[in-house]
Length: 389
Image (cartoon, rainbow, N blue to C red):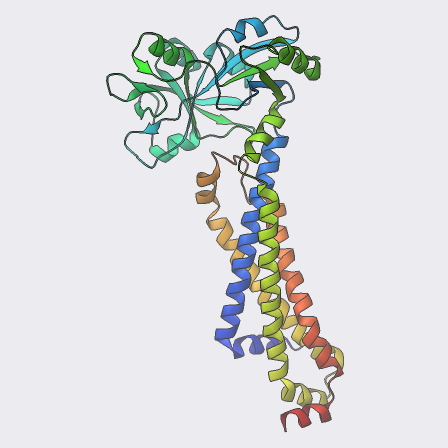
């Protein structure tokens, strides 16, 4: 194949080539984003622990359960530990747009229940000893430049202090997670700190527990525990729904709707539009080169070579677009991770995502080049001169 001629053809219409490359780059970038989101959602669900169950209200996740339920569930065979989770819903006082997750938890069972969480700075013992202490994820610490020993003011929205001041949490440790099911932008604090403030009248808000996490002993049948716990509170005062951690994560994701299907539809629409844009560009290029193709055949170029020249041009343009799109994705990966990690901790442009983007671009280039390539192969010198004459 005459490679110099191939590159000359691409550079012969710089504006058209740039626009086509840009269109392919945007399409590849969007496809990579959409695939990373769907893959991250699936990974978040699949990475859930098999030995943890979550107990929530059968009415809604936003309905709290009584505190007395913990003692009753502690007697169920197979339950090794119980950890309360209570959504706090505050905002960082010095950043009005800075929303992140905060949960009140049981410090005595939290660490053993979540072995995938490890401290990279600070001390868990200090966290346990100080009722106003908290643990924060590495991404949260990096985002706000928080350090161990620093006091973090959080303005309550659901739970408000009666004196009108912000809640203050002392950073006792910074953690990282080895599992995509747990993000690194969460603040964990003592459930007792919140509960005692409510009881003493120092704060206002709903009493109870949002979710009970049950850590099962090895060899325990989760279905048996689920049935036992659900039956225990069948008659109230608040009916419960016990699920595996994977199912709980799946339900949380489904609250946003059928996101994977929606994203696949959007991705399909993008690919459909870009395919026809590239195809139209290559058909135009093939017709513009009718005279050149006729001359090439007259001086001895084969049908195969002239066809491959147009197919190669299409593949080259799409390959350049893929390279630009993938490079853009890699450059923007960290900002996207920071924005999505609270909801999709496993969001990342992994190898499969990048290969998918490259394969789609190459496939689009190959198929788009076949139509003008087939025409070029069938074109004779006489036909070419007649068309341009």
